[in-house]
Length: 222
Image 1 (cartoon, rainbow, N blue to C red):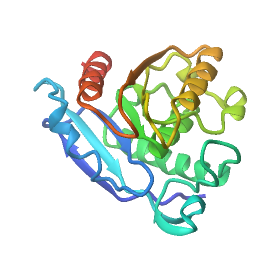
Image 2 (image 1 turned 180 degrees about the horizontal axis):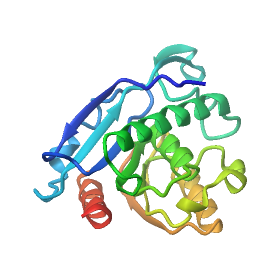
Image 3 (image 1 turned 135 degrees about the horizontal axis):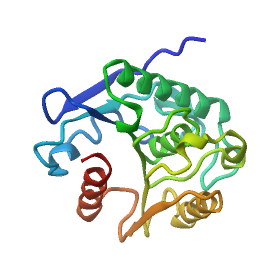
Image 4 (image 1 turned 45 degrees about the vertical axis):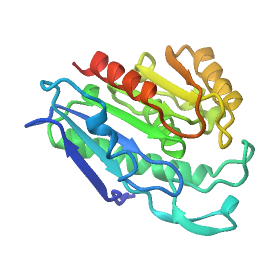
């Protein structure tokens, strides 16, 4: 079945990028949400990256009284519980399509990083840990591990040692840090090595985190 690719915004930090960061926004936002972070990362001039910011499709969201908004999947209730497996897997397929497009443009899989905030981070984890080819890394911000019960059976051995960056705000009212820590524990139980960061913030991004993201991207892609 053919999956339509989401519309994307792209920023290149140098001529002929040889690496790509596909960065998914959170619920109700769009691809422009993290566009301003690219210059703030202060990446070295020699690191030519293509940042790809997809726009999620419009869909009804149960916790918002069924209102239609940009969303990677439906959220049925706050704090965990039942998950929209069909929606999560549809966004996984869309992200797989974006990975394939980067490969077709000459970027090697091991030079592709999947990143995301909140819902977007959940899709990055869902996709990257199951992707058949070894990827460059996964950056999961203010998020959790979706469909955790299926990961052991579905995970890809190619990405068992993938660099994983997870960051969360200790005062997050949307996704409690305890849920993020449970996700961290689940990943570590399956043998993944996670670079974990906590910041005194809510459901957002802070300057210290941006600096840590920059350091991590340089470490895995430079």
